[in-house]
Image (cartoon, rainbow, N blue to C red; front, side, top):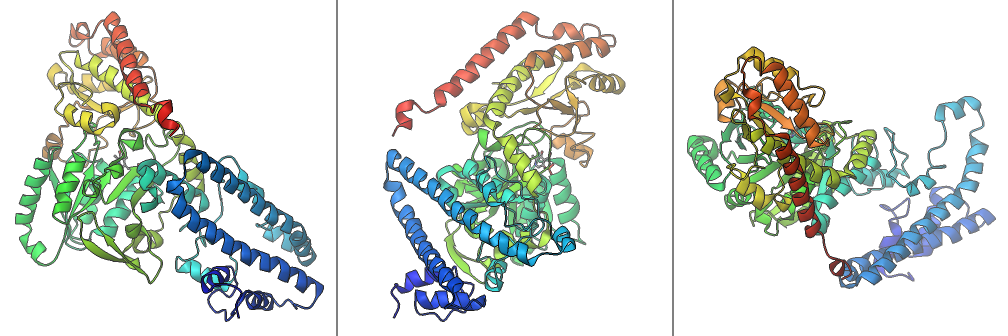
Length: 607
Ligand SMILES: Cc1ncc(COP(=O)(O)O)c(C=O)c1O
């Protein structure tokens, strides 16, 4: 008879090399099976020693499960002092467990050395990977796990890993990698806060890979995509040139103008009428949004659009790259219907902030991201419907596992390192954006599309949806009112270096500019460009971390050099230096003091 409850024995069995086939009825039998599996005679001194240790370890796994259950049950009830105590006690347990492993390494290494005696074998194998890695657990930053593959414990554990039931074994770095997983868990914490346990993220090699994976995951042959108009040019190209192509998925792709729920609803009704035949065939409509969006940095009323889409049972994908979790957290809406189903970031931009890597991520509810092979999960979707999700309908198995665009460890580390300063950078960028937008808008011949300006059509949504009403660090200007010929405009643009980087990206440390009609949105035809509010002289400004006055000084000097000789009097239209200085000071004081006031008071933190 077992000395343990069936649950406790089952918990101990999870550590057995025969976890799937064990016939042990108690712990002693489980340990005996364990020794037999590795050919250890139990009656020898070594066998007895191993029996004692293994028995302790199986018991430890039972206690750990108790601790897990207790934590889930009790944590919400504990006050802050007790949570501090529990955290540190568990933290110390990690060191104790690692110390056991470290101590085990000495006899383990000696055994290994006695077996691998040949120099050519030693060289080919390199250092045995289990040795000396234990201390890396306590590295102060997540470890960069540079490996294609992993050691696995035994046949039955790796079988579980292939079914998604053993997360300790990561099998192969195209699928899972500890550094990338550390980042995935981190972005979920940053985006979802207290709702983090409900969400999961998969990292990709670029923002585009994340977009492609998400759209490929949900959209099928002859489905319909309704997208907001001003999306990143690469995303436009993907939907328009690949998904829409009859030889590919023959998807019907439509765009809606405007930023409000009513704009979306009107477009949806039109799309429904236009594609009545496809819908009658069971094809679906999917909603693709980018907010804040390229190139003007305007925000859509995403909560209202999500609500309207979910009321009709539609799935919503939102690219929130430009907001980063600093300016908005669309998954933190209390009302589930107001959240997108899939949230995407290009980490390449402000999230990393250094411009040193390309990477992307998709975040969604657990049941849409991963279910162990063969299983199904009953859930309520964001439309409030009861849905059963099968394992092969989750993003992991449907696209992630098979498409191979996983983010490698070096890049994941780069992203994690960069995002430590996200708060500081975004607040500064929002402030600089406001200064630049006001400075440029004060010129009568420069038109500014930025919701940082109070009179801008998008300012009310910015105030309602972005943190503290801060502006997105992206906007456009155009010179359509200045009557410049193409050559002058081009020469002026080419003179913006070195203060403004002539670079195609956004969300970098330095301020970068491009002409959307020639670069990021060059896939669009003239009518599409016009509909997107992009003129031939539109310049997109993606604000960086520099001081606003340096940028302004260069802008004026470049205009003096190139525009003034062709359009005398142009430079007299710029705001005067004293007025610029006063505006810079006022803007900084206003933004930083409102940020300070938004921070929790000490009494609140002590609760
Ligand atoms: C809003 C937005 N989403 C996605 C992307 C694509 O990201 P990546 O360059 O990492 O592929 C970009 C790129 O500029 C972008 O601006």
